[in-house]
Length: 615
Image (cartoon, rainbow, N blue to C red; front, side, top):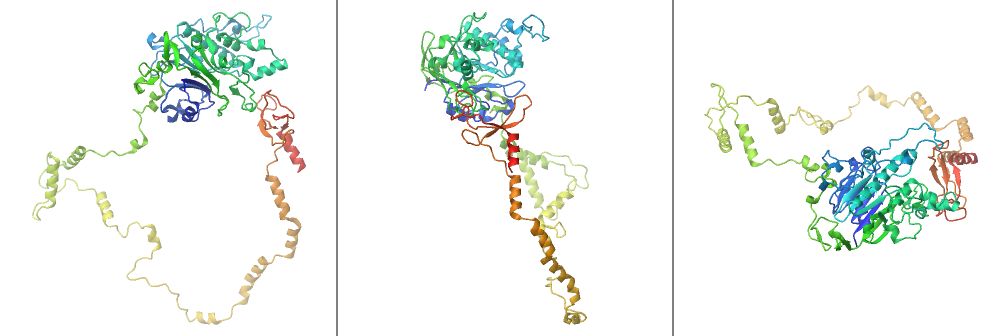
């Protein structure tokens, strides 16, 4: 298999290792992983056989793009160069030339077009809106972790996750990001470098790449010219060799510089979509858009042998897109194996590995060098709680220090401590224990603590008056002799006549009457219970009360409907409703009498009230 690069908007990363096994790629670019640095795990960073580089959001979670690559030469983060390398306060764009990739947008390029700064009405009157600053804030663009730039010997790889259209509040940010990205790509190509850009661009190039656009043109609500003339789409088409630009091209974008690899292999293919609406379940009917791309500079367009989408891989609202390189590519006037120029010099020769990849090839931005994942600095929990055995020297020195305490006789003053070797000390202890009875015993300067004596005494011979065990409460108390067997006392003479007397019937009357009343209820009470309580009816009533309402069925297919909740702003926001469970068809509309979603629509409140009235 040839050298493959794959891009995938995963919409939340889960099991990285299994993803790599399925994709079978050499370089994988993920977007929208929805994690922050604190969420990184070993199985995301320490993937066997892979090196990884991250672009993490600075302020919020979700807008994250990161790339996991094979072998890299340089890896700055962001497209403007305003960010700093790890453990450095100098931005990438201010580093020495040999330590930077270059092509950073200039201040003139980071300026909004004139039409975006026009905030007056058509008649020229001021509508009260604040005119935005024409300068683009580079730090804001790179604060959301939307791009990462990697330099290989063969080309510069740009992994990107462009902002999507949500509402008007993000229009300026979206256009600013696309403007900076366009400037960075053009500057790199002007420096003579090859560029490979991939990721989620969030723009459908033409109506052929969007089911919504085709449906709008069919209904005559829009035209092809209007569709491709929106500012983001016009800018993107200006970058591509097969892009269509209506009218005169913008200044600085007179020439296209990038090639759409996947579309070049499938020029007339319709329905080649990479993103679908999961809320409306439009993927089975293939009503989506192609917004994920693999692009390259024009001098690389002959390097590829295949490119396609992998629409069969589930797990996200996007599908992967890949491009496969030829084994031999034109490089520096000759043909070179692609793996030779995708790795550090000397690692591959004619496509065969010459040496193994080691940590000395890792760059400072590698995820494996993050402090929490550096294997040379990490300690496991076992290491933290394991007791290290003391060495022989430390044991002997501690024993010597314990025995070198001053020993004084009753007649003499404080003794001067003397230093002895461990062997001499042990010999002295042995001789003191085995000395003759007539010898004068040595006394310690301080008596041993009483606690230790009591502790040793309790260990050797536990006291009978001490604390009892649990079994002690269930045993008879120990007496002088064996405990006598328990026997009933003999009846006294005064009790004997009472035993021979007949039982007192008057004393038993209350007990007998009580038992009789509880065993035989009164006839009046039985009549009341029989007239009110019916167990079968009661059971049915309680069953109806706690049984879940039946789900309505759709009109065309008679299948159980699904429940959704309105999120659109307005008076119905938060209301639940029932619709047909089937997905939308290729036209993106509800259809009657077909296999796709039918027009069934029922408010949940109406259905509940109908169910209650029927019961």
